[in-house]
Image 1: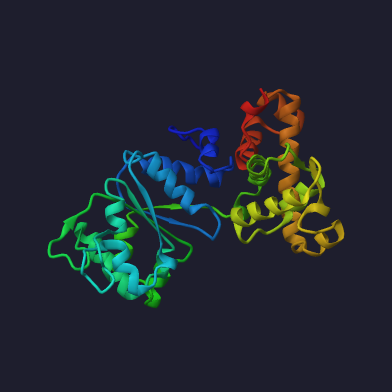
Image 2: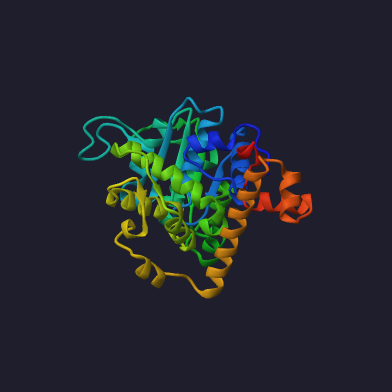
Length: 329
């Protein structure tokens, strides 16, 4: 298993980052490493993979953790307001500027400024941000003097910025400023073994939020959930679990509670044969490994003998599925 010195999987879970698979732990190791160095980091990955959670972890694990974390939703800022929101303004800068207003840079002083969906910035907004990143000086709108900012820069995107540079919709010089180091958040398709743990964490959180007694999905429902593509990744999975939990009146959530799906209608949403077979193999391997480890009380050598595998091969399988033997001691 990947070595993460500053945080255990349980600590990551408390930060909203759940999983034990190798792709997930590789991302956590990168976060742990980069949190200790004050450099810009580009976080990339598909929609719903937890990029803002990764940014918050980078901030709160670093030396700026007791200072502000200020997210900038680039998709919600029109070009005409970008500079005012970022740099702020002084009284009289424009018609409605009746008082001084601190921008997002000033609000993040000493802390972290996180640009989410950085790829949607217009050419004009990219130029304004680049000017700031060159020496971290800025001038509020209407001000006569420049100011210097002490902030760490993090950015996130679900697009390929290198492709953006080639196609002309993203500035090459800005990509160099942002992508000093990077973290890639894996999709759920790359870590299907984490789905049961993610589902359990979601159920626990939503039960607490809505004051429901502890409940769980039955095995058939969990198997169906593990078979789905989840193109929206963890965010889509969370929404699905929340709907199913709210539709359930008892302590066992079944397929009939899953957003109105029945076993028959769920079958219609099944992936292709090859995808389903691959997912079934992953689910079988994970379940078998956990069962044999439970029987051997976490003794890997004994579990390997019972499975008819060399200990080294058995260990690689545990690593592949993100299974920690200590859970069964």
